[in-house]
Length: 438
Image (cartoon, rainbow, N blue to C red; front, side, top):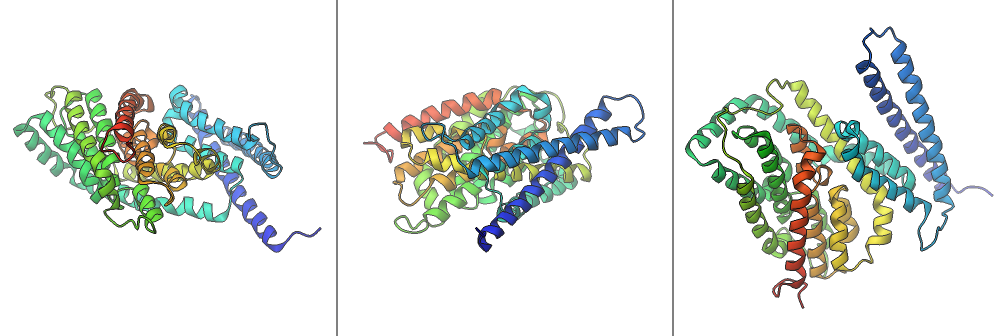
């Protein structure tokens, strides 16, 4: 039996994409092993460590290729393990579990979160068997095309050269205004304006402002986390704010909603604006007393342009990793999430804490849903996105620039997120003027 040209093309494309993924795994393994060997050695490297790193990373790549081949066979001959669950479902579930637990239990993962998420993204796409050239091109281009990496790079250079002036201005404001008042205005202002200047720029401004605030490190971290919740909420009000809102508008622009530029503002402002104001008040409560220190930066006192470029590269890998992770997880999202009732889906969307909420939006939002179901799905995604570092682009940018660890973020992000989820659940589903009430 001959294979059709179409099938041959698909097989060739899949094999090429898979080969590129294996090469990427080899490269990451090589760099990681080389760093590890050099950091644990007191002797000069005469080439032995380089050779050992090459051999060890090659073994990792070969093991990955073998696993990918085996998983591909499982995908071709789907094995039903009962209740409609397949080996692919279990594999993707284990990847999601690793993404959720890994950064909190293994320090090496926490300190190399970008590389870890990239490997998990490659693994999820391989398990799902969805490698194709279009996905590779999208993963490579999207962080740039969406303006995320260029914004980080340009803003980083602007702040690098203009930091002294910004610090002087912030010092003047702090000398003449209560620090709690500044915190409230910053949280609410960035939260609401993020829908116009984008969540990315709002996060970059947040970092520079917080760097200049005379607070202890713990207070600065708390303030950043609460503000990122506000930015994540506020950015949804227009299609300019974040990818989630752009995708939601594009999927609802036809009948029956004919969504335009202000569609999400008209439907969600009732929930978003009070939430941003409440976060402003919460931020004031978490803002400690001002210290006597001058306007200083937390990790960037000696930052060079090379550091600016390195940060942009890390954000690039982070965004690419989330895109791959979302593409791989789309199988179980489509299979299990679409039939879930709104009340349950609202809580299930807490997965947005570790997955790209734009991917979940693309899978869940459709014109066939009622406005109440759309509201519940989007609000669940927006709130959960602030719980952990991978949940939202502002989180990633702020944590990266300020050196906030996953544990430090989760310490406040998870309880604040859970309280907000509970409050909004009651509001959306049971308050009389809510869209799902009655």
